[in-house]
Image 1 (cartoon, helix red, strand yellow):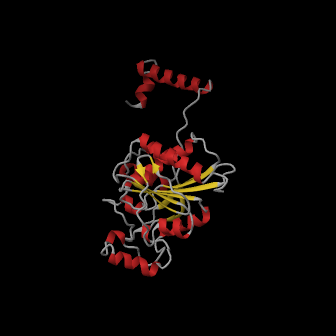
Image 2: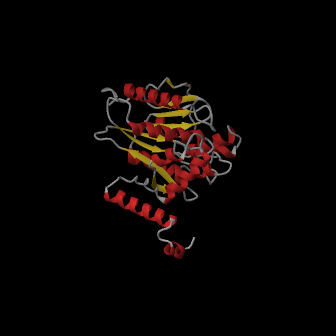
Image 3: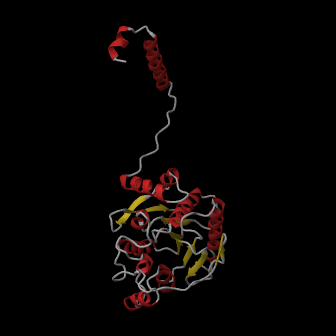
Length: 301
């Protein structure tokens, strides 16, 4: 209906409705009735990736990704996607823990679990002997994850978990790839160690953040692996310790064996779906319990 009709019939039904709405709104503001603030908009690169992650990842909705409050890290993937990170510092924290998901893009559940654990870490509902500074990188390989179909390697075709600079990499990594995998393209270690922006970023984070523990989430073997200088956890939830060995260029080999940083590798049982929420929570509780026993005792410090 045009505006001149309203003007010609100010006392009519429509005119009265408009007047009532105007007066009611004016009184609400005059009385100071609180209005709901819209949730702050996510930065563009984060909003775009959250949109992609929600569409792709199992058991991840828009609220979980938004509430994770991820921020772009100082590096980008081969295809220019921001490598998202969330820092959860704590006053007087003496223990730093780095949690990494999505090193392999087709292991979708690993990124989902990282986001769920981030929410649990932020909730702070678990008593620990000392404060922990957490850092989460839920999707180290966004190009492989968002690709349709998702794939293990990054956009350059490199297996990021074979691209870390373990000793004798130049000889051992290509040799292992050729002889043990039959030149499987899903496990190509790359032309040289740290050839990829994603592996370089994680390597630099290990220097900048100097974690006391790295938790690397994978799928789908359904076991718990460990590399490092201390007694490993025996189980997280329904995952039991089964140390499967080390590989040239792997994060566990580089961090746990050669740098002396304990690396807990969580191999979820399924790549396309997460454990139940209660099971993810139990795995988290078991991880914190082991940390309390092994990393937070006076002897561990």
